[in-house]
Image (cartoon, rainbow, N blue to C red):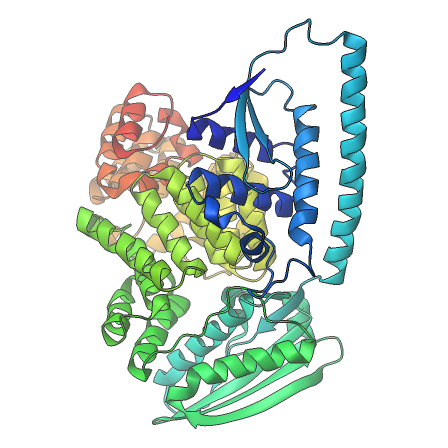
Length: 600
């Protein structure tokens, strides 16, 4: 017997249960389809659940998609109905909530079902009925798999990398323009159906280094390379670019653009279009052409370059330049998205955590989406904002939308893990997302660094140590993370040796993380040295670690309480560290988690 379902939270829980089943968990395309239908319906946006919108939003077709010539939505809907039927006669037999996709439409329905009475059908007829359903579903699925295989092999994405454009100007200060232009070209290509561009973090590994196209292509796992140079003299701009096929070092296309700086957007579009034509691909969904002033774009590129060149500290410094770009052009969507991300980066600092800051972050991200509803970076920023407000459902929806729009951007995966999955303790899922980020961005150290952290949280210290050892020798906190892995392996003296290195020469303890060293001293029985470090630092995170190392739970919990001001993301992320297992079951920690908006 079936009755109507009115609880949207129950529907969302059932959606996640279905997507975690064996029939969906490895099928990203079908899972994305079902998630789109359910979420749009629950949000009250049934007007978006139509074939033309689904074709563009879910399956990446062009805005001028013609359903009469391309039946992808109808074909995938049939497969989805069959897969749901298979689930509910298999793994979902006992589920109380049923998700259905009625024939002839795409709006899902939700029903609750009561336990079947014993008198409904004799056992033999019931088994025969189930067998017929499973057989029919299997046939439909088999046909669907063949269709999917043919489509995938027909339109497998082309791997392409854009190397940093060389700055031919005599002034090194113009580096920001070449770096920012490179980054924008990568972003343009990421919006083209059929291309899979390598992210900027991997590409920028080769900045300023001698290049052999075949070696670069092999390291980046790219089929094609875009390289070139930028020369800016006053208000004039010269851009040289060429597209090279990696396997034989053959130049498929090259061009030179001598223009005014005001034509930079046209140059970007022409380069992208010529690359596409050379590879015989079609322009895809989500493509945007921004028109803005030279002054606004110059400030925007400066801001982006700060993050590229200096990491977290650069992102914090970029706030002023993003604000300047917005002041010059209040309609420039990427500047609002960049400002939101920069404000989020700054929110990890105690002096900037306030209600006003959260409101600025949210308003900036929403303004970017108002101006460009398909801007992945804006959804990414909004996901981080919602997480800092402990609005977890909204945060997850925003992050997943960002990944739908730009599945190749490893930074979005990093943000999803650090701001959402870690604070909620979804460690295994975090490991899976980070493996995708590492695969998309094989040479970037940051995804490997975060993956090492996730593996330690999962108790897989040997694997974490291997990732730490793969980091560049000068990577910030690389030694510290390796020391943590060594502590997890029980190699305490090795960990202490690694952690003591930064303190040779008397570095100021207020400017250096000392928590893990104090923790290691405590683990080694060197209590007096651990206490000395605790007295020399004012950071509550470091003090909590040291007190845990010496086994002082009371002082550790008091130190953690002082971290509440940093909010749910920072506290929740830090509490995933295995070092905090010592206090994890304490009821006072549960009270603290609830206080900042973290679930139990």
